[in-house]
Amino acid sequence: MSHYSVLMILGPDVAPDDLAAVNARIDSLLAPFDEGKDVPHREIMSPDDLQTFLEFYREKGLPEQLSHEHLAYVEDWNNGTDAVIVGADAPPASIAYTSTYNPASKWDWWTLGGRWRGLLRVRQGAAVGVDEHWRAFPVLYGEEPSEPGTADVARVGDVDWEGMRTAAEALARIDWAEAEAVSGPDRYWRYGIEGEDTLDTYVARRTGGMTFAACNGEWMERGQMGWFGVSRNEMPSEDWDAAWWRMVTSLPADTTVAVVDCHI
Image 1 (tube, rainbow, N blue to C red):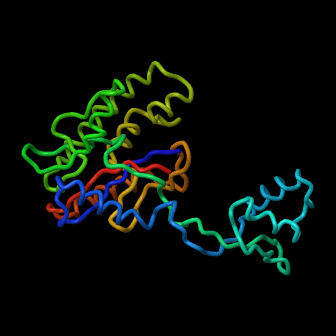
Image 2: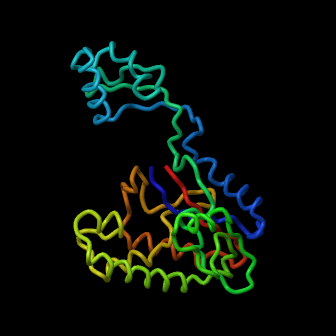
Image 3: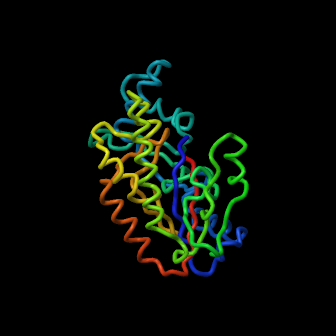
């Protein structure tokens, strides 16, 4: 129930304007992180999860304390199988079970561009990739179309990275000014303004790492994305910004990159 942006690093052998090859490479790189991929492994319920489980089934007549009666309900609870009680001899006890949920999952579907259509600002005449479906989408729904000179896929050397930062700063200042007329939670949900933000800290965050995550087969992200756009275990903004720009500036100019809209 959250969307977030990912910079996909596709390598030099994928032409930006060959969308079939672009999408195939993205699909291959993202495959290990598919929420729908079955990855059998053993897990142990955390203390918080166990407490929630026990409270739920206590209301259905099971004992208040963990017992073997609970094991028959683990599959109903989280699709876990082969459940056993562990730690009974050295409390706290818990339940171990086999799960097929991919522990590396990051997405349940993705699309090229999407909500971040046209994020890459490119030089005139560059070979680029544009998802035409998402270019038409904003017009159909009364939103502003993507700007000319932007793309969803391009070579690193054809992207105006500093121009992207400048455009992001201009937009951040416009959003900050608009938010002056807004109060309460809407300042965060509509504009991403956090409680202690000043104009300077807000602009700095908006002009830092241009995407939430990056992937070249390995995954790098600011934090773990959860429902409704809430991130957990998020690294400090300045650390992510530095890491993101260090990564981008280290890529060879002929490397093809793409911006993907991921959902989880």
